[in-house]
Every structure is written in C-alpha cells, then in structure tokens.
Length: 448
Image 1: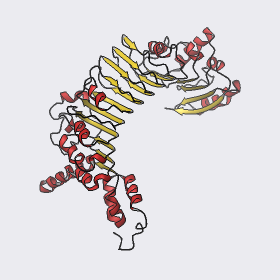
Image 2: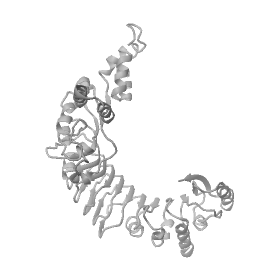
Image 3: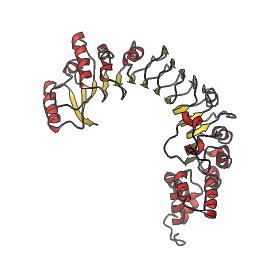
Image 4: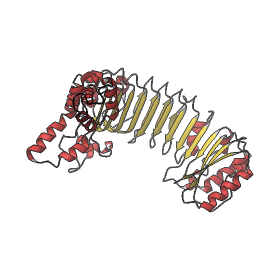
C-alpha cells in the first residue's frame, strides 16, 4: 500500500473510484486493488457491482485437505453474503458464477448414480445460499442479479431462488438464473422486474401462469431450454423482446403480448401455435414442422422474417400471405435434404420483398431452381438488397442472373463465396459479373 500522503488517487472523488471498481467487478481483482491503494480501499466499500467466480475458486480449494479444506470451503460458501453485508445499500449488481458448461433440464429427474454431486459448496440457487446475500442490507438496493449454478449439484434438488429473491429484492429490475431446478411456490409479485433470463432451467411452472402473475411489467424475456413445461402461455402486456428456445415438446405454445416487437422462437412441432402479437415487426422462427393448429392472426406489423425449417412451403404461406414482408431470410436445417426446397419457395415472394438473404445451406441447384421459376413465371422483383451464400464451385458464370434481371435499379448485391473457393473463381466473378449489371452495387465476402 502507498505511504501516507503519497497515494496518487487521493485527489479523485471516492464516487468515481467506486464506479471504476464497479467496472472491474471481479471480486478477486477488487481485492487486489484494495491492497494497492488506500483510496481504492476506501472506495471499495461503495462498489456498486461485484462478480464472484465460484467454480474456479472451488477447484483450487479442492486441492486442500483436512482442516484447511473445511475452513476454505466454509469461507467460500459465505463469500456472497460477506460481500453483500460489506457493501450493503451501495451494491446494485451481483453476479455469481459456478457453472461448467450448461445443464440438461429435461434430464434432471433421471440423473443416474455417479452423475451428480452431493456436496453443496457450489449450490448457489438454494434458499439458504440466496438468503445469505439477499437478506442483507444489499437486498432491497440490488437492481441486477445473475446466478449461474453448478449443474451436478443443482439438477437433483429444487431451489428456492425465485421466491427468496422476490421476498428480499423488491427493487430488482434484471434477473438471470442458469443451470438449476427452480420452484415457484411462494413467489411474490415483483413490479419492478423488466428483464428476466432463465437458461437451462427445470421450472415447476408448467403453464408459466406463476411467472405471468408475478412479473407484470416484464419487457425483455429470455427462455433458453427451460424444461418441465406443458402447454406454456406467455402473457405479458408490456413485453417487447422475447427469445424462447423450447427444450422439450409441449403440446401447445402461446404468446399473448400486445407490445411485443421482436420474437425469436425455436421449437420442434407443437400441435398448437398461437401468436397474438399485433405489434411484432421482427420474427426469427426455427421449427421442424407446423402442427395442425396455427393461429397467427395478430401479425399485422410483421416486416422482417427469418425462417429455418424443412417445412418452408407451409410456413411461408402462413407468415407471408397478405403481409408486407420487407426482409426475408431463409434457411434449411443442417439435416435437410437439398431437394426439400424445390417446391417450397413461391417466386412471387420476390415480387413484394425488398431484401432477401439466401442462407449457406441453399445449394447452387436450389438457387437455380428458384431463378428458373422466376423466369418461367416472368416475375418482377422489387429487391433492393440481396445477400447470397455461394457453395464451393469452379463455375465463374453468375448462377442467379434471372434474379438480377428482376432486381430494382441500384440494388445492393452481396455475394459471399465459400472459403474453399479458389482465388481464380473469386477474381473472375468480381471482375466479370459487375460488367453485366453496371447499375447494381456489388459487395464481396467469404463464409465458411
């Protein structure tokens, strides 16, 4: 530590130093800063953000034995509570990370002997662990909490993280929980929560009714591989952004969100899909096939559409008919046969779409089929932007000339060559193709 009167940071306001430490966030680095400067030591008691990496610390401590191991383990288990008690009402953001990869929420009920850890030194979402920091003076002051649990310890026992956090952290606006089995019994209404992220979670809320009830002001929702759901219904009146990757195969999926603007949905084949989202302008949909019942009458504002599916024909009819789609991005799943697109794309799409992206898995043959259909049907296009991923090929002639013939004047065309394409082919294309279409603005790149 610097000698008295020699600390160069003494002249800086303590509030600024506290914010600097908050940007560092990592608890170990903050501890090192405390030793380096008297001013930083004083400012550390007002640090607004702290991040604890539990997994790396635990692995190091597991090398200790006997009494040293027991004492270190005890110190580790109370670390978050100690930090929260130390910083009190100054703490605004707390992140705890004990993760090692992701969990498998749908397998939580079928864990085989030897695949789970009976210890609890890394079990961060249990009620006692959460109350250790949430029950301090920091609890009501916290605005952001992010916890990544250790799946071998958390997968086989229910965690009370949600009800405990809702009891103590009344002003929380952002909450993220990963790798845990969460119960919702006792969950209280959190009117200030606007951001919620649940990733690799087994959730005891089959239809999401408890989440809908207790988070009425949610604006951003992220559900990534949340298992345990049966006929889930998202119903948040203020929700604007939603990313939902369904981990199991529920019979139905429903989203009722009048203010939703952006939706990214990944699912398999729900029998019922309901999208009551009249304000939604952007949809990214990854789905195997459509089920027998699809209700999407509330998509009057949809303009940007991305679909990844082997059932493009049905999906395009559902999501493009009668709508002014300006940006269309099409993709085939990795397992799809290249011939599955042959009857999927109606060339009339290009007559009312201003921007089209043809994904990497659209082979040359499929692209040739598309432009053949356009030539046959004499379609006129209003394309202003076109992005094409070309497969590896030695062909130097442009494979999508009919599409270019139907582009709007001054169209921007971006051609991405496969990384294995020879330099000779690239040079020939970039020098010859623009000569045939001088009004088009060309850009070149690479994909792999």
